[in-house]
Length: 235
Ligand code: ADP
Ligand code: MG
Image 1: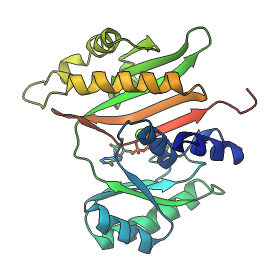
Image 2: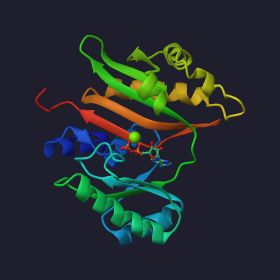
Image 3: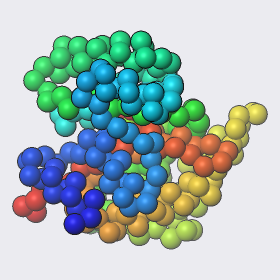
Image 4: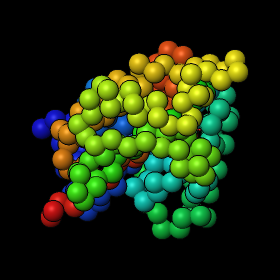
């Protein structure tokens, strides 16, 4: 079995359909789609060891199969600069979750490197009853939530589809580098959309995918959060 099959198999065995961030990123990595490497710590000591290994500053997030909107639950701490901050963040995350999501199963706290910020992009996949998998592309944060500035294309995407879906959002002006801001690496985004399209095509079990956010840089980018939902096994 491949890593992808193993993870999906395990999720189904546990009667779940939603993958954690760690599982989602592992599936993407196995498909050759690089994300910000994310490790699980089951104790404060382990979190400190991992942080030293990764290098400061780090980001810590709640790892729970029951929580997919981690910051809403008080489960994300960014920019942790030393062992003391990591130890404090560990306790704070666990206590926030116990308070805000009583009864949620807690695997531990994940640790990852703090990616430098870039233009926040969202890439998603949803299944249309008629057209099957459809990819969505947009700018993150307020732009997608308030302005719904997104584009859609049916999987599989051609390179031309990928190019068009990037260019047709209103926020394209920002991607080109607005008033001295760093522009986004359009070629990286195009390649990423094509890789995601290919991954969705080869993973029929996938029901939903959310890369939110992807940081786009002048050169390359970083997938900092990922969430996947798989179809029910019975389907
Ligand atoms: P949520 O489950 O709430 O969507 P995220 O993993 O997206 O949690 O984290 C919330 C925010 O924290 C992100 O939108 C991003 O701005 C920031 N963030 C998360 N991970 C990283 C990281 N590795 N490096 C830098 N910033 C990060
Ligand atoms: Mg997110």
